[in-house]
Image (cartoon, rainbow, N blue to C red):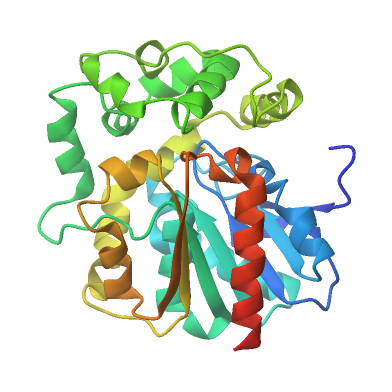
Length: 328
């Protein structure tokens, strides 16, 4: 995209097409940003140049199945083992021994999994919004969400079974992305969709939005998300949900395991995941896995789209956290 001094890299890693953008000095401390769904590498475009200007080597990959990455068709290709191998291959390709990882949504879970499996490659993790992957040792997650989805519309249950959601979203990428980005923001109430019956489509369950531009998103920025997902389709992103039970099984050996990796957290006061999907003590869940939880900060007013909604506030916190990490 014009106006940004980053470099796009396209290659093959871990057996699939890979893509990342990079900015900053090649000898700077490495910071790797990992996004979730319906986000992209571009979700970090207000963080990357700020950290690069501060002297960090900043890398933001397209996570598998989304954006410009390969999109394996089977949910089995989106398990913890595959995603962890992607991140390991990225570090090896870039010649990075250790990095600070910043993750949001599924990207936060990915960097937590990576820190548990490859702690020697992780200088620290900074998790945004999602403190720990929800894990009930006695029940696979999709089973629990299926029970919830029998009562009212639930996006996870809607996404679970191919191919209805794939067809719906692929047919209307602009409407879906506009609605879901607004719904996930601090200016809307996600839980309004629970008023709809289970058979409702996600697009129909979501309220309409104010016209763009919004305070935190322009027409041009939305168009980039639309362009990327129009090219890739949505099935890869949906497979991150469809593989939840696979990830649950692959995390079984790490039940009760604690990590010595330095961990940091930033949340939003109006984040849907913190409010509705992480239990009564979400920070306690993270601390149980990462007892070296060094700091927790909450950004007022913002929702799940924090890197866009509260870019300036987040950048201040990230620079503070990184400065403290580098001084240790």
